[in-house]
Image 1 (cartoon, rainbow, N blue to C red):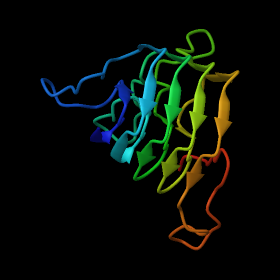
Image 2 (cartoon, helix red, strand yellow):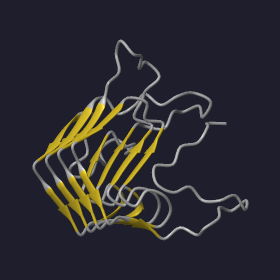
Image 3 (cartoon, rainbow, N blue to C red):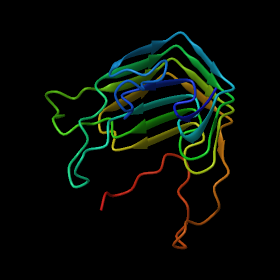
Length: 165
């Protein structure tokens, strides 16, 4: 499947009313599936979990709601931006706190042989505060990103993190 975001499955995506693609929802469980040979033109070749963009960019997203990704094979997917296998973006909403974390759980998956054109061949996380990544096999994922970013800084590798400005 080739879509803009979430080639295999998507949750919490910012789609216009009446245009929600198959597999998109807020919150929920993605379990016991094979996400093989999917591609996205943007983010999340295999699975993308994201909160909707806020109307005012100075505000936080409402988040994606709690999502569990469990016992899947996420393999040989391609993202033309971040997250060849799994992409989490703005999952932690403006109302999230340690008392109401709306946790994303990624457990018991095989995440292998995925490719991203930017960051996170296997997994890419941005604005995802409460995430449990437990008992997964994450192997042989890669990114084709250049060694430096557009401003000349070294490109992040592994599990990149950055301050929000």
